[in-house]
Amino acid sequence: MTLCEAIFIVLFLASVMVAIAVFLLAVTRRKAAAWRMFLGMGAVWCVYFVILVASNLMARPRVTAAGEDRCFDEMCFAVVKAQTLSSLPVRPDRALYVITVRATSHSRSRTQAEGGLRARLYADGKYFAVSAQAQQAYELEHGKGRGLSQRLAPGESIRSVVVFEVPQSVMHPGLTLDHGFTPGYFVLGESPFFRGPDIITLPEMQ
Image 1 (tube, rainbow, N blue to C red):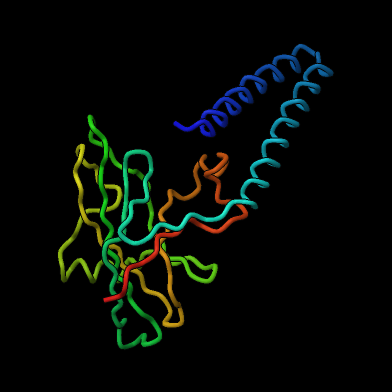
Image 2: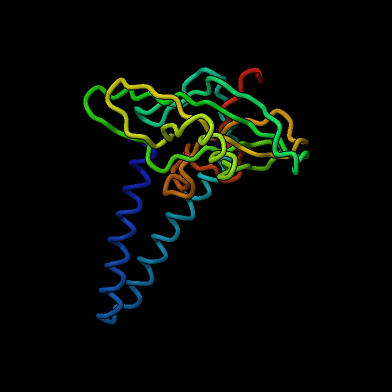
């Protein structure tokens, strides 16, 4: 747990305690005290969000080179291979990106997984999710692989393939890995609000 995560957790727990206190004061008809406490907690959150937004506006997205690890605690992921293929004949304006991601557990003692992790392509301010149809077609031909959220033993490493279908006009996309909308959106240094995503560059296409 980082210091910023600890700050958010402490602030959240304090807010819960304040909410309970405000409720108790309100039911005992001490509304003035309840209102002061509510405004005080609100002011603290306003300051926190101002700092959050300001830090995000000044921060630059992290760029991880192909082959290098992008880590979430002890679970690390690296793009090791990328291919472009033609899409279906009925959709000549589309291209398939087949990306191989290496997942490695650096844990020394326990089996773990990076639950809820999702991969998306990002280019020109747009996200492209994994294509369920293209992924299924690839797995029918090459066999079903292990997903990014697979549980790994300490020191274990696997390769996972994700397939995207994107317009031919998309140039030089990068891969993003995230957990969707989580409490991390409100943690200093981790929030994606008002800044571009952290990118993993793709290796030379094959």
